[in-house]
Length: 116
Image (cartoon, rainbow, N blue to C red; front, top):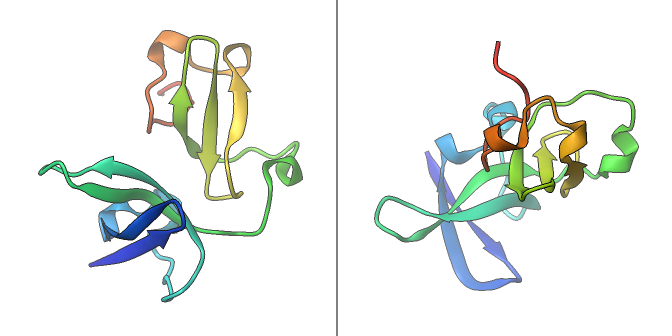
């Protein structure tokens, strides 16, 4: 399946494919008009598309303190970056000293966990 999302940050709609929905939310049934969170990337033809789509859950990262969650790296620089998870809305700041992977192993869109 597929669908479209809108944002106040750009005009018009951006399409998404069901495989672009965050893995933890694959079985979630999205409703028209529902608030969602997503990244915008180019598709194979260079057109913008929504990826890592997930519903807004009404929970901030600080409400998840002491809990372990799966997610992905939204952005990572030399010493710091931002993580995202289906468990909370928005991004969580992370410093390289708090990672299980070394900074040279970090890639955007990848889980911040060591394989194995």
